[in-house]
Length: 52
Length: 187
Image (cartoon, rainbow over all chains, first blue to last red; front, side, top):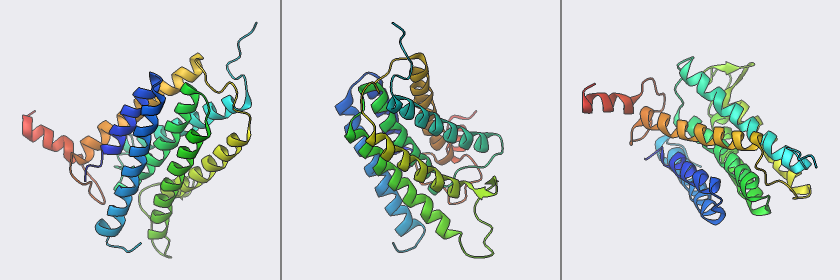
């Protein structure tokens, strides 16, 4: 798993928002949330070997 | 005419909430760098939850308050809350010493849960306030946003140095990415 990915997307999104690219920022924010949720699901079900 | 830094309660609330998130993420770095406690994968996810809420607040401060921004902040808060509650439940059994150090007698993941509850409640209250004048270019607002962007970049660099591009160890004790870099480039 690429655990740095959501931080990378958040950083890119924040730079976009600094330059007032609101819609692009919102899209990148949605991608960041999706990565976090996917990451948690993988970690919880496979890595920690617990069932959610 | 005097130009106020906080022309509305909503502007004040957004900037104070962002300041609180910057404070929390900074303290996490103090614990990591000064006390040498590396963040576990679940801890990184909790940091990410705070980053998402902060992102929503930055959207409000830079582009003006919209319910869509608050909505994403609440979703980020719920995701982070889910992760922190998961970690609380992992260590909730009597006799379990918990993971990592404590702060004011509570573990960091428990504080993270409390933080998410507070921030989600705060976002709900901000949603009820009039949306006017949240967009701000004051020195204070700009400093907060720049500081937040720097902290997110620091988290990106720290995660890369800790885990490299692979999965993080469950109980990390060394910077594996940094060690990989040193052996790869011989310095």
